[in-house]
Image (cartoon, rainbow, N blue to C red; front, top):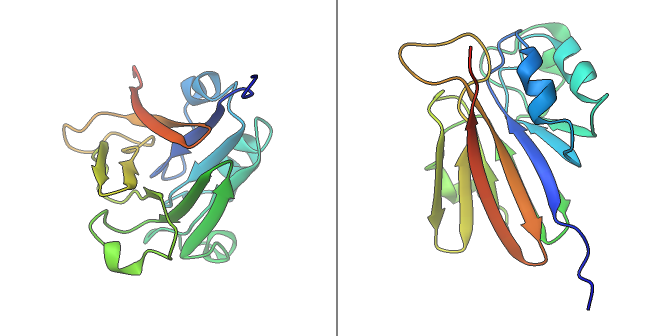
Length: 157
């Protein structure tokens, strides 16, 4: 039985107005892109949308008129994944809509992947200007049938 190809989703956050060319290469074969806030410049979302459809949320520094139009949180269904995305902290499990099995957030600039019960939790880290000694990174979320997996990709800068 042919189960089809896995769905690959590019996960990015905290670009703060900087879209590194390396990100375009990492995301070149993704089916969708999720931006977890602090976009910094709406043009970044337009550039990413040339690769794949983009869903984005607003971060605490997204104060330009265009970025303020982004939603604070978003729920999106992709394949068998029910994804809840917001910019805040990963530990905010009390706000998850029923049925969520993936939680994406940003804000801390620290890349992180873990499971909490049946929910895959991911913060891709910051893809924008380096902050402190934290890595510059993005993520890939892979959905295959009902399986969900994630990886962090550290960018060389």
